[in-house]
Length: 309
Ligand code: NAD
Image 1 (tube, protein in one colour):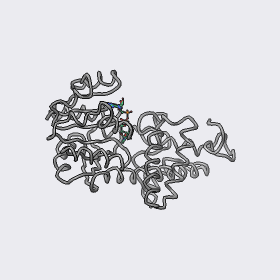
Image 2 (image 1 turned 90 degrees about the vertical axis):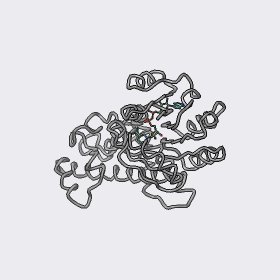
Image 3 (image 1 turned 135 degrees about the vertical axis):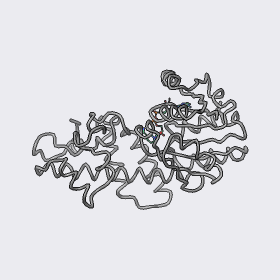
Image 4 (image 1 turned 120 degrees about the horizontal axis):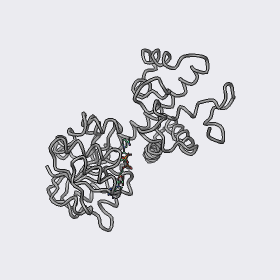
């Protein structure tokens, strides 16, 4: 298939590369020329403009940082929606608010174009390995059409409901992820404060009722697991600033339905403070540092002190 691909950053780059590996013709566009060059090295063609990337495309995929970027790409002054073939399928994989996802899809539908939201879970590692989970919202027919393409980049494709439902399911998941990452970091620090070995404590909790994904697959204590951001000075992975974006989307969604999300609110406060302490670009498991003592036996953990350490 001919696929127009927008946004070849941390996630979109490896996703586009996997589409090429699966035999698709990928025409990529990004605002950053260096990222386009990398995409070309991975076998994609570079488009000189957004409009060029959608020319003749049977599928259009976007993997952009924000709702503003998605709105701008499809509906902005030089928006590409009107240049996309009527028979093409549009798949937005960006994590954005459900209202924007619904609005853009509704405008596409009015013009006779099919569009779904398909945000992902699995991070950069999953994007590289082609094991992402796609959490889709949209018509069943459109999602069935998307499935073979999505399966070149991921291991699981879910339909959460109509347009926007994919975004809602995704932020429910990420709110829970933030909560269990914080809980895991807090428990590990308390154990270590009492002289426990973090690796032994992790093994015990993994075999007990405290087991969870953050503990088991993404341990935040440096050195407990290989090949996770905590063992690489919290580099790579899923940035604190992106977790803050997703928590903001979750709280916005909670407000609109008056849902009670006290744990989500607390998670947002802690991640916002952590980002402001200089960790915005670090992986979200660096929240472990928030609970670290500046000096042994000092009463205030780092995150609760004014300056970062
Ligand atoms: P990124 O910033 O690395 O990549 C986004 C890319 O989009 C950038 O290269 C940017 O130049 C490009 N871009 C912006 N506007 C554009 C436009 N109009 N046309 C073409 N390109 C444009 O971000 P990322 O980490 O790849 O994340 C992308 C999306 O995936 C975000 O919505 C994020 O929340 C979500 N996500 C990220 C992760 C992760 O671990 N990084 C995990 C799950 C979901």
